[in-house]
Length: 210
Image 1: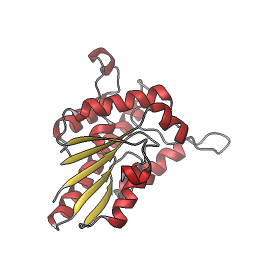
Image 2 (image 1 turned 90 degrees about the horizontal axis):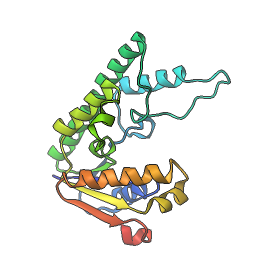
Image 3 (image 1 turned 120 degrees about the vertical axis):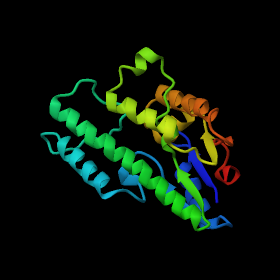
Image 4 (image 1 turned 135 degrees about the vertical axis):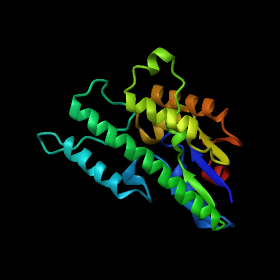
């Protein structure tokens, strides 16, 4: 059977549409979260949950407040030796996690299900930066992005829920308009490399988007 990915900026309605499809799609369907937020994932390796817990403990401030979880998109360039070991562990686990979800997807398809992806790694980590900027990224980030770009499978179909960055920001108030605009431009460029890439106007009423 087929795989379908729903992508879009925060506030585009990905999870809402995914929930509606899970409830009413006429064919056998399995939902699989394919984003970077372990806490939002419906499946994850035990090691991923352990690393997430350790990361939160490591980042707890003197007041006891833990800052929001961050991704590989924004990390410091220089690391101490212990930091390099930690980065290596996280890289190996991240790739193992992404492969694990592909194994689950393959197993669902083998059983006759359409697999609905909420987000997708190859879009979240696509990079179209100038070479001199890209080389400034941490080494493990570059390896991870190379792996996804060259070895991770494309969905059979990708549905991009597009809305102007100003609309997305007004809906959720997260990130920034500039960040959301850059993210969506990256999605469009990555879509040129992906089969059956469809753009849907997410400013329409929910029933029309669905």
